[in-house]
Amino acid sequence: MTKNLLNCNKTPLLEKVTKGHVFITRLLYPKIGVGRQTILSFGLILLVSFVVLAVALSSTGCKVKDQAQTAEKKVEKTEDLLGDMPDSTVAERRAKREAEFQEAAQDTYKSPIADPNETEKSSAEFGFGQKTDAQIEREKPRANRIGVLAPLVGDVEVFGKETMDGAEMASDEIEQKGGIKNQVYDLVVYDTKGSMDLAREGAKTFVNQNIAGIIGAPTGEVSFAATKIINENQLILISAGSRRRLGDTGPYNFRITLNDNYAIKRLMEYAVGERKFNKFAIFTSLVNDYSIKLSAAFKMEAEKQKVQISHELYLYSAEVANVQAEENSIPAQLKKLKKNVPDAIIYTGDGSEGAALIKEMKKLGLHIPLIGGEDLMVPEFYSLGEEAAGTLIYAGFNPNSDNQRIKKFVSNFRNKYKRDPSRVAALSYDAYYVLAKGIETAKSLRPYHIRESLMKTKNFPGITGITSFNENREAIKEPFLLELKRKDNKFTFVSIREPL
Image 1 (spheres, rainbow, N blue to C red):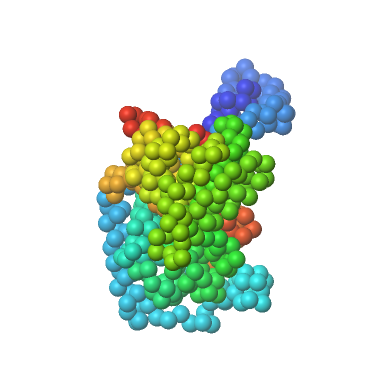
Image 2 (tube, rainbow, N blue to C red):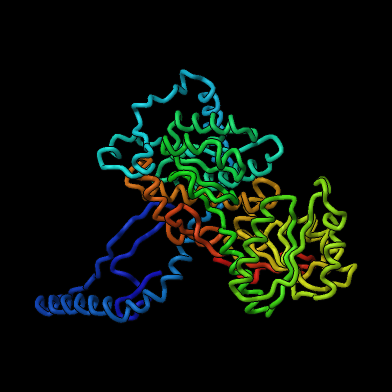
């Protein structure tokens, strides 16, 4: 956007021209034509008057307009974050560098064990991060490399591959636009195979290779096995989707995931305030601990909003001993609602159980909506169609959004990987961009400075929401609120509120 000194909307005296991550500042001098008849003193008076007028306007009327355009400027800057689909040579160069890294990681001559005296570690006495300037100066600057620590085979490989692909897409886009601080950053991947031991080995390899930071898959071995190594060696790790709180596992562990408790608060405010629901049943699947955690959060929020919990229903696994038949039967649990039908059922299990729950509700004539989390965003649940219409959930990402930035990301991802991006892929993509921004604005490539820069992340315009970090390195962001509706002749979750 440009602005004129008189009407605040055309040509600036000082304009910042942004391209990728390179900022060029240019000064546009006003040109004054001088004819033969022009009196020099008159020209000087006119010039001085012009400058005074400029200063006066910039400190009064234009300020108001500048403030009104703040949100618009953020949007403009946001658009620059999403790159066009990189050409094939970018991926080829990255693949070649990745192969060289893998070779070096296996060769002790090319990847020697790091000298413990070479890098100033952060010890417990200094709070894992509180350092003097002299200590910071002794830190070894990081290399132009970013790592992905993720399982690429095994039971949880889907999370690893989604993490790798999201980071890879962001890396290629940034390279296409000129890199980070005009430098190409290698993206290197270590496969943990879902193993705690290999996660630790991966962290050691990244330390030895002097990696600037890690994008971590949201799997247990990545989130917790290597925390000691990561923190002692001041190696940044940003988790792309872990649902477990990482804030107390060390100062170099960051998490970009939506906070469930806050998202539940927003969803319940909508359900109570706008849908006028005042009586809820809570249905908890005791098969996984995440469901139990969410149910507790929903119950606490219901109490805060002073609405009624009419029933608390539980579904045990059929493998649990000494449990009565009705306690692992969805129909038996739902029959308890017939005497006092609630306005909605809060359900916190997975998508397949949620689909079974909806089918049984319809058999019993319970035509009330379900309320839950993003685990219901699965094809098995969509396929219920009209039966599940009206289901309300919160989510950290909506691939079906009409937001142009998200649509562009989804389109690019489909073209590159021949599938839709998941929540994890989107979070990994955002995590890479956040890390790249942290490196770009850091005082140096010393780990303390990179961490310090990341801690200052405020209102980063990602595709999973406007993201900031709190003092515990946990993301502060708004949820997507979604409702299952018919859209384009099929049922899908449609945004009713978006955090962008």
